Image (cartoon, rainbow, N blue to C red):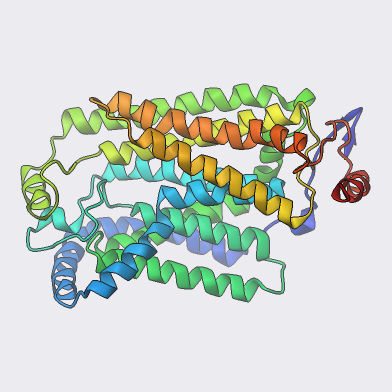
Length: 402
């Protein structure tokens, strides 16, 4: 669609995700009744969960631990680092970027909610409980479950809700989430009720987003495409990111300054984990840095939009896979490199091991690599004023012959 001389990217309304009244009511009931009820019954549920996990760990096997240890990576930030470029190179980038935004922001929500509740992991409250992974961070919500639920459910719904393969996609998503949730309990990372309440948070979050799917899609398109008209959105994103950072820093300071970590949690956790295991909110706070990945992606996408058409990625499948492999490899390499930095305080670690590398990775993937790919003929080298899909298809056929 064109507005004056400017092209305005648009997604057809009939392809947007619709949410039924029943789903909206169920999400509201979950928010107003189920989550508060879990808070009232938390002590009872924790006592029951302690006995359940203790009995479960008696039956752990080496093969079971190895299997679920591998499954647990499906919900870590490493998975998000690896798959985010796929949404940009292998899918419709307009929808793919929206999935990236939703998934990354879920990590910020985890950080904010978890710091607010300060709920311990099972092996913090009882030294008879052993964790296989000894992962740090507060447990409500469960970080791996929240990210996995948001990432996989959004992907299945966004790309398959009108496809004939939607049943297969939904079944695979449910299977992955069941394995992930059962695995984290089996490994002693979370209580069962923490898994359940995390699914509730994910359900509310996704329902709210898909209720406003049209607004979300329009906002995504304006944030990443049409440089001449929408470059001011980079400034908006920067301002909002700074306010979000201020909010999570404030709650982290309140938690660390006014609420000392229970000494029994430290004693219990370090009984079976390393002596320098972090019992507290630092690692929870670090996950909020994923808002800088979104900021980097917006900044990078708008930089690309200054020089290339939004359909620069309309090439043959093998070129798309090669672009994805290069982007994912660079992303993992940069993140791993910065993770080796030894920081002496929380601020330094947050900045140099999380915020800056995440921003840098996103900016490179969305801003620098597309221009590089266009120069080596892995992407279309077409100017931004050519942004009509029909015209791009004819150009793409010509480019594929090269």
